Amino acid sequence: MRVRDMQDEIVRLKKEKGVCVAAHSYQAREILEIADFTGDSYQLSVLAAKATHSTIVMCGVKFMAETVKILSPDKTVLLANPTAGCPMAEQIDKELMLAIRETNPHYTVVAYINTTADLKTVCDVCVTSSSAVKIVNALPSKDILFVPDSNLGAWVARQAPDKNIKLIQGGCPVHEKVSAQDVHDARTACPDALLLVHPECVSDVTTLADFVGATTAIMEYAEKSEHRDFIIGTESSIVENLQYKCPGKRFYPLTKELICPDMKLTTLSDVLCCLKGDGGEEIVLDEETIKAARGCIDKMIELGG
Image 1 (spheres, helix red, strand yellow):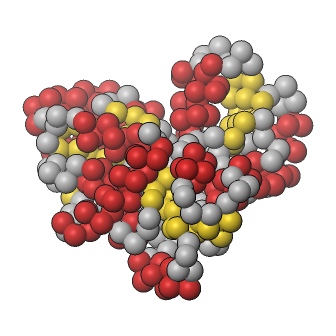
Image 2 (cartoon, rainbow, N blue to C red):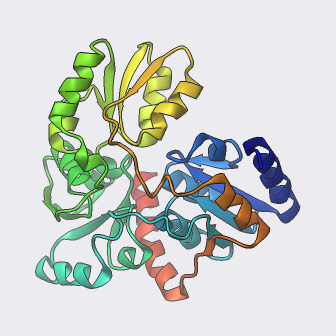
C-alpha cells in the first residue's frame, strides 16, 4: 500500500469514526501530514482536551498519551504504538520519589512533564521546557527539587539564581549524548549558522548556543529569524520539519546521534491499524490517579498561563 493511499484511508476513517490524531513534532513527516494537531507534549494535551472528538490517537510516547487522558478523562485515548516509551520518564518511580521527598521535606517538587502519570501524583507542580523558568520563579518556596532532567534543571537554575534548586541525576539519553566537541565540529562545518539547542542538552552545550529553547520555540525562532543557516540541537526530525516550513533556509543537525528511537517507532501503518480497531493501546488510568496527577498539571497551568 502506498504512503498516499494509507494517508487517504486514515483521513477517511478519522471522519467516519470521529477520531482525532495528535502527533508530536518529532514524528515522521507522513504522520504529521495526517494529524489534526501537532506540537510538543503539553500543546497536544491541551488541544486534545479542547477537541470535540471522543477518541484521541496519540502519535508519540506513553507519558504524552497519559497526559492527554489526565486532561480528557472522558475520552478514549489510544497510543498508536504501545511500545513507544520514554527512558527519562521512567527513571524515577513513585516509590523512589516518596523516599526522596521524605529526606527533603521542605522542598517543593517540580516535575518535568516528561514523567509518568503515577509520578505526577506525588509531585507539587509540572513544568514544560518552555514554562519551567517562569513557574520556578513564581513558586513561593525557595527550596526546589527538580526531577527528573538534571540538564533542564541546571539550565533553569542559571536563570533562577534566587532559588535553591536541588537536582536528581537523570535526563534524556538522546540529548545527553551531545558534547561541546560536537558543537565545535558543527560550527567548523557551518561557520555562518546559528546554533539552536534544547535545554535537555548538557550545560557544556547550552552555554555555547545562540538560542536555547523548547522544540516549539526553536522552530519559531528559526522561522522568524532573518538568518539563513541553522544548526539544530534537538531530535533530528526537527531539521526535516524546518526544511519543509522554511524552504529558503538551510538546517543542519548538531550531530547525527540526535535520534530518539522511541519517537521513531510509530509508523503510518500503526495509525491506520489503530483506526481500524486492531492496533494501539488504550490508556487506562484510575480516577484517583487522574485526580492526583491533574492537581500537578493544574498548578502548572495556573503559574505558567
